[in-house]
Length: 321
Image (cartoon, rainbow, N blue to C red; front, side, top):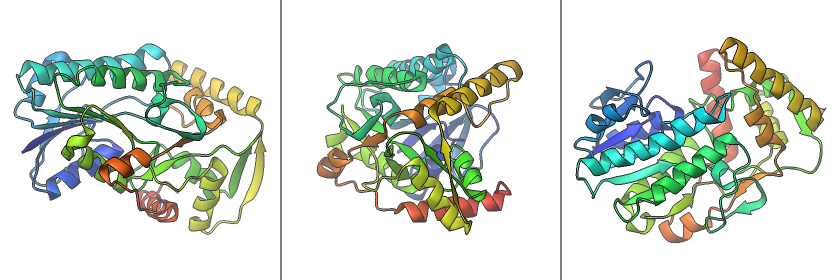
């Protein structure tokens, strides 16, 4: 069996490549920029998912396709749509073009496609994205599921992913290292999350189980947190005394808008941006993992404290904290 993993140089992609090779699966690891560190036996494949011509050779001979490549930060909506949505269609078409109607296709979707929720999103609810990234992931999901009569497709919807190798949460760990626990104005905003190892295990399960075909699944821990809870947990692991810092919504929005202006002017992508600000100011980012548990027996077992501790050790080893 051979699997193609797009976005293999990314956080989750790297873990997934390692777990597949441990199972004896031949892996073709697709990346765009600098070659990632790959396990023995994995085949490197430098390509751009927005380049239709390069995708034909990438999918050749692959029984499984895990599509993780995408963009999480962009200054304009068109970039999100081109990379996250249009490239998904191109990859699905590449699978069909080689006559591989059996090729199992797992899309890395996102809770952002479903939209914010204080109580917990469920898969049967309509998609209500709140920002450009979520819109592009919702469109990628709609495109993928439109192929369900032609390919065995599945959509994974992870929330915030935590663990060693992650860069998206680094800002929060840096704040925690300074003892800062931000308290956004208004009621507490619940956040669903999952450890990267649990998430990779969930992706493998979605690629194996017939019950997963044609369906979206939230892959998440039953344990929820919040921005303040995440910062406080990280501070405890780092051994730092904390102080609460009130953060008005207007101040966060203004700072994020300024950060995006800097990004447009310089090309440098800052940790803060309007996408992140909109996410933090939403009523909550909670989802219900019940469908994956009931239909597939999937449970994300790693506690938040363990994920944060492993992440902190990795950040320190990189010299980032």
